[in-house]
Structure formats: structure tokens, C-alpha cells
Image (tube, rainbow, N blue to C red; front, side, top):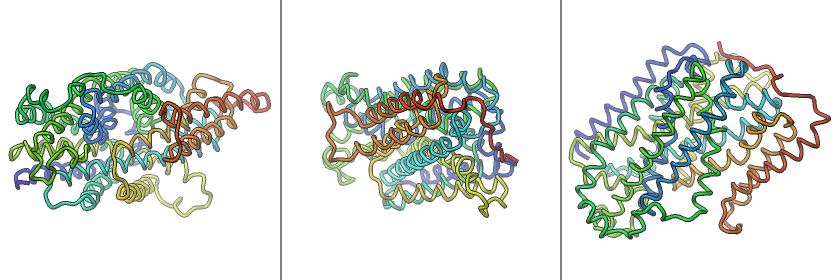
Length: 491
């Protein structure tokens, strides 16, 4: 890569660390660190939500879908639009109308409020584990971008480089740094895609005629997928908008219901069609370039030698001139890091606010809340980085993390908000059943009917057990809704 491109990327990364350092000096309490003082505006939050949701999955995973199946891969983010707008209508009004959540910091506190502390602790473990997986997937996405673009940098070296940067500025700045940098990163990404990546790649591969001549016709349609794909994305992605810790942190960060709902509508529209089609089109262009032999100089003489998830950075490295390559790669690094930082903040919030307070007499209680939060963020980030070194596929890791969380958490959340007969015993059992069934059925040796995804069976098991146990234990259990106090350690 030319020194000019490297200088552009270097300045971008230095800017991220400067953001983190600035907010490091501003943050005074855990409330500042995790929910931005509850004063964020809809545009910043909305762009942060979409930047978070389509980070590594967009830049690498969605590009890989475009490489494999063409523009039909855009339907994956259509479920993101449905999820965002459903949450704006059904979730946000419930949260913002309840005074309890005016002081909440985390998603599992919903379980403590509506069920009990045992249910909240289990929810925190599931959520924190899932978000470590999310963070790992984003670090891996950034590493694939870097190793596929920078000559002489291997995947493992890139993992430590990208992971170290994401961890450092997140540890320093907290949620305000995350949200504000997400806004900037999204603007960089959109500018890079609209004005650099798409038009130059389109011209370099030969335009529409070359595309039609290089790939099967079905890759240019919206029907090149099976119904199982649609069902899989539906049951793993839409529910995440109701159980995602990153999303609850942003709901809490909004000053009122109107602000939060507007932010979610903004996010949904940018998910699909805007970001969805940009991502799969660049992946499709990479497939055309591979079919034309444009990557032969990189050791990939034909399509069979190209990892679909590295096709996109190989395309950018091949077609973009000096200077523009640096700008475009900064755009993609921004997409990856905007998700990695949010997921790491979510896992840290689960540990600091929901798990550690349950440990009596622990020495960390002598630390200030803000210092404890930063230490936890650092250690969890390093754990996610180590996990990323053992994984190979970004989209698989991301969707597996989605499925793990959704299978256990979605049903008891809906029960808490819309079915007042739910009990703590039912919530705990449904979380265990949902996650366990999904994990057991996810093993390679298990064959499922109609090639259905394991998460569908996990959610079904969770729902059946939740309803049955709620009806069986409800008469003997004291009412739990709106009775639990919120633990505070915010100053």
C-alpha cells in the first residue's frame, strides 16, 4: 500500500484514540460511561445504531453474501429494518414510559424489575457471553480487511492491531465516545461507498455488460435464496432488537420516548435499502472481478481460490488508486470498529452492573465505578481478541452469537412487557431451555427437518416452557412486576 494511503488510515486511527482520550476526561460516573448522561439526540443515536448493527456484518459478512448469492443477500438487512421499526412501536414506549428505567444502565435490569435477581443474573451471563462473541466477530472482520488489503500483514497480526485499537479507545471514552465516533464513522463510510467504492469498482470491472457476462443471471435477482434463509434471518435478527444490550444502552441514553423512536426509524431506513444494497453490490463486484481473473496477482487465479469474505478487500486493493484506497479502507475500518466498540461496551456493562455486584466482599469494591468499568472493558476486550484468533468466519460467528442470545432471552422479555402472568421460575427455565436447545442442535452431527435453523427450535422450547411454568407457578408466586428496586452504583 502506498505511503499516502497508510498516512490517511493512520490519521483516522489516531483520531479515534483522540476521541477516546477527550471523553476519558469528561466521564465522571458509570452513568456517563454507559448511557451518556441520558442526554443524547436522535440523529447521533440513530446513526450509532445503524453503524453498530451493520459494522463487520456489513463490511465483510454482507459483502460475502453478495459474492455468493448476489443482490438477494440484501434481504438479510431487511430483517434489520423490520426489527428496528418493531422495537420503535412495541418496545421503546414500554421502556420510556416506566420510571424504573430512568435510572437503569443495562438490559438485564429489566429482568430484575419484572422477575427477580436470579433471572437478571442469568440474563446478564447470556447477554455478556453473546456480546463477547459479537466483539470477536467484529475484530475478525477488521483483521480480514487489513490482511486482505495490506501486503505483508497476516491475519493474526491484523487481529492484534485492529483489536488493540478498538479496545483502547473504547476503554478510554465509554458510550459517548462510541456514539459520537459512530456518527463520524458512518459519515465516512457513506461518503466512501457513494463517491469512491461503488462507482470506481463498477467502472473497473467493466460495467453492467461485464457483470451480466461474468455471473449467473440469478445473482442479479432478489429471489436467489431459499425460504430457510429468510426464516433464519427473521428468527435471529428481528428479536435481537428486543434483547440487545447495545440497543437498550442507546434507549436509556435518549432523553425521551420521541427521541428514541425517531432514532430507531432513522436506523431502520438506513439498514434497508441503503446499506443493504451497497454492501451486497460491492460483494457482487468482487465476484465479477474474481471471475475475470483480476486477483491472479494476489495468488487467486479463479473464484475457487477466493474466500468470499476477503473478496471485498481484494477488490478495493485492486481497483482503487493511491489516496482513494486509504479513504475507502478508513470507511470500512470505521464500520467494523463502530460495532466492535458498542459490543464491548455492552459486555462490560453486563459484567460491571449485573454480575460483579452479586459477588459479596470482593476487592474490586474499593475501585471507583468509572475505574472498575474501564478495567472490565479492557479485560473483556482482550478475551474477545483471544477468541477471535480461533475463528475463521465473520458472519457465522456473528449470527451464532445472535442465535445464542435470542433463543434464551426473547421470550421472557416479551412475557415481561406483554404478559403479566410470567414468573421468575418460568423466566429462568425458558432462558436455560432456549439457549441449551439451540446449542445442542447446532452441533454438526444433528440433522434437522427441512434444514431449519436450531434457533427456531430453541425459541419454541423457550416459549412453551415459559407459558407452562408461568401457569403452573403463578398462583404460588408473589407478584414481581414493578416491585424490584434498581441497584445503583453510578457515582
